[in-house]
Length: 119
Image: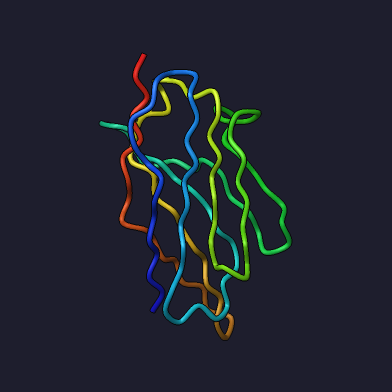
């Protein structure tokens, strides 16, 4: 089992910045991709950013140029630097780790944390 612990969420004014972190513990062998998702009230969970084991990244169009995802493999941690925040960025943010073991993929999720951007 992999446990994910998130930190860094909170309340910020529009135009401000936040840095989210998500650290894995437990049986962390085989961590592959890491990512951040968010869910706004009344909407489905959506991909925000993802980073593969080779460092390649992809972002939702709505956050390109404002958010940066990074990973520290030694610390088994993924980060999301969020700049120029907008009220539309408000939601519950979840980290996701993909683990591959013996050709089987497993998804692990953080508990979710609130990010609120006030106008």
